[in-house]
Length: 133
Image (cartoon, rainbow, N blue to C red; front, side, top):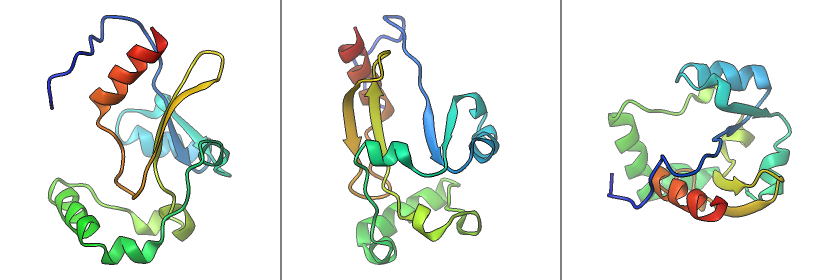
């Protein structure tokens, strides 16, 4: 991880993860990673739509060289997609990240260009600190 200017002792904010599916499914999945209390289920993907997150052409998922390389790296690290538990249309949902203030106003949004496109966590924390300070 790169050295960042973010100091976690300065300011406070909450982190939540929005997942596709019911609240029960979100808690079950996130619970496998010790994060059940931080996950919010979004059955009809309203949050994704509100953030302007689009779908991804699944054919590219299996043919794009950069994504094939990333999938191999993730598999080597012990991560993989559970296609048995994934609806095909949900597997095509592009990721995103947002900073929402206490009033519910979106202050910053990152819209993923491919399934693995999220900014590093330390960069998001720095941005949150800057925007919410």
